Structures are given as C-alpha cells and as structure tokens.
Image 1 (cartoon, rainbow, N blue to C red):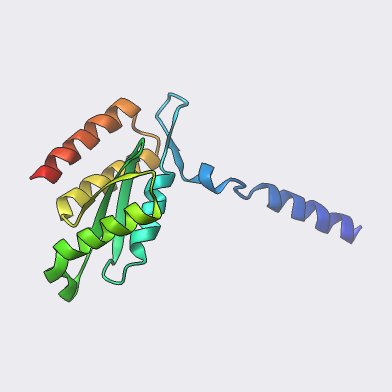
Image 2: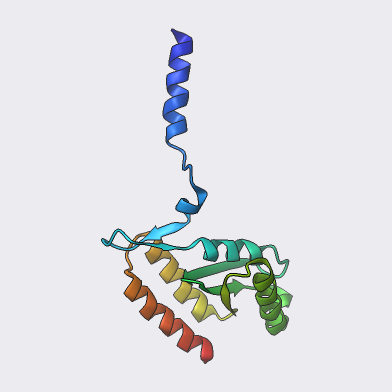
Length: 142
C-alpha cells in the first residue's frame, strides 16, 4: 500500500514539471493564441552573461532580430564601446541565425525590460511588439 502511494505521488509531481524548455521560453500574444518565440533572446542573455564585465542582461527577440541591453558597473563602464563590440561578436559567433543590436544605454535597458515583462504576461500583440521594437531601434540610433 505504501509503495502504491509513493508511485502515485511521484506520478503527480512528475506531471507538473515543464517538459519542453523551448516552450518555457516562448511568450504568448494577448488573446490571440499566437506565440512570439523568445528562445533567441534567452540564449543571447545566457551568452553575454558569461562575459566577466556584464552584470546583467535583458533581451527581446522579434523574428531573428534580437535586441540586447547590458548592465555594466564599476570600472568596466570606461570600456563600454569595447564591451558592446565584444558582446556582439560573441553573439554572432555563438548564435549564427540571429541579427543582434547591443546597447549599454540604461533607457534602452528599461524599454526592453518593460517589453520583456509584457511578453511574459501575454500583454502584447505582435503588432504592438513591432511598434515598441521600432521605438527601440529609433532610440538606438540616438
């Protein structure tokens, strides 16, 4: 009887785990049933977080375009241009199927964080995401 209870408990707990890690990295679009995949964005975050100079990273993907904001603190802030260049090269080398824009601007980081959270909460349609990304592109140009 105890053995049967243990197997039932294992079955219930095991069924609750997320089986597909890629599915866990996708965010749905509000009310549309369409998913906007963010696996490239999450992979980009993991890639740049391996850099010693990078304290944190935020990223959002739209199709194959990935926008990455880096948080760099302390003495490393004197070398932002080099850090951005190194991060972009590292991303292009490790994820060849993506197009990357890398920024260390805090405003861009705030915008991407807002977009990322909206995607996680299924509060953006693809059209809204495109509009927000368009604004980020404009801000990146200066």
